[in-house]
Image (cartoon, rainbow, N blue to C red; front, side):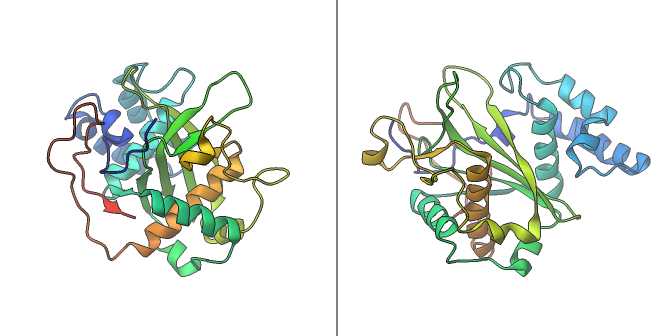
Amino acid sequence: MAVHEAYARVTPYELLQPDEGWLEQHFPSVADEARQRGTDPWNPAAFAMLGAVGAAVGDLSPEDVAPGGDHGLAVYFTYHIWNTGADLAFATTDAVRTAVSGVSSGTETVGQDSWAAFVGRAGYVQLPQHLVWLESDGEDGPESIDGLFWAASPRQVLQVALVAGIRPDRPGFVLVPVPPQPLLELDGWRGEPAREGGGDFQSDLPGAELEGLLGLKTPAEAIKLAVGLLGLRARANGTEAVVASGEGERGSPPRSNLAYRVL
């Protein structure tokens, strides 16, 4: 499959919404209930227990998230993106390679001040289509990774989930949670091996070396990818957000309607 990086595609943040009024119908109630009950909405487990969250999940189709997936976690990231201002970014192929190279070599760090700037924010970083693949040694076949959700709590904990499996021949997407990380310690992942025996981000897909494809097999690789991409996002604060315009070529993926920053 050819790598596509001409523009930001429709995001899972948009795909999850069953209709235009769903966000405003449910999310103000989520905020009110969390405040009244003294619940920390940044805690995914506590968030999922809110009645208003259950109502929001109830409006979703079972197909919106792949079988066995966590609809509550998808709503968690969607809520925080809505509540904090939709921080969306699109990483070019060069940006992804820079992120992977930097986090693997450990030569570049972001610094605690830059990581602290993420506190109380949430967003989505989209990757070029078909560049990075979720690969498993089990029965599940490889899935193209669309991007990653992220949310940084006031307690300085980073939540991340990969999004994969967005395909025109089926609805929904695959959501893969990553172990939460202390936000201010993310630079500690730089230079650390993520696979036993090395070979971080190498793909086993046919033709991967020729096409320059990347593969993720371990949670540690997912964390390192997030560290690299969010490091680039930290440096892009001064860039202007854009909106994809015009009609794509026939057969090309649909464009996102949201403003995004190019990394």
